[in-house]
Length: 246
Ligand code: NAP
Image (cartoon, rainbow, N blue to C red):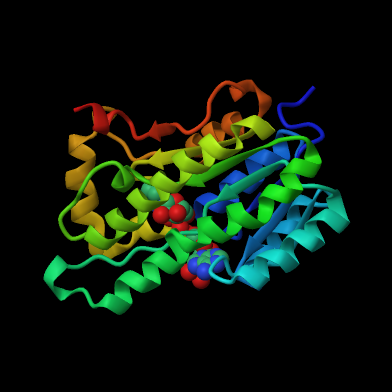
């Protein structure tokens, strides 16, 4: 039997990047997957490629109404949702003094309110399913501060607090909530020419001396989504080639 046989999973920001890797892995492990994103064309194409056990629903994580609609569609297609991967996230980097309040609001809208709306809206579906697993994708930047990344740090730390508190409140309903903290992972953003030198310098500091693959994070997400992680809730799971241990 596959790891996620009979599970229904929803992934936000699932059309590309790491989100698409999570979609592929959950699907490969037997879950029925609702791919959500604001990118309709890419999301539809991924669902078409993966076939009948996936469907695409447009979802802007900042919009509570959009969550209600998406969950309604998910339940009508596959039934109550067992797994939510809150993956959609954005970053803006610059010196702290240059940030405007609007920048912070924009990041909080996606990285914090996205998780807030998603968790609030999915809980009743998970109760119907008899339990569930919520995996909030954070970052190493949700565990430490980095110059130039202050408001991303703030948004990801806030989401970690939410993860831990909701885990406490919903443990009695067999609903687990954990966070995943990837280091530098091979995604389109990290392969841009203008940051090549910065990335190379960073790689030198990683004990494993390489950038991670999205599939390596997806394996961790699948484990947390599954019943194999049944005694883990409210915890932080790192996938970073060892850099946080230095
Ligand atoms: P990505 O390639 O930019 O994918 C994120 C997806 O979310 C995109 O399709 C994006 O669409 C979508 N999105 C943005 N705003 C949204 C919204 N309001 N509602 C729904 N979807 C929205 O990002 P990634 O690099 O794979 O990162 C995925 C997650 O991992 C993020 O939470 C990120 O913070 C975290 N992370 C990434 C790394 C890394 O090395 N890549 C490391 C640590 C943590 P648009 O392209 O239109 O914005």
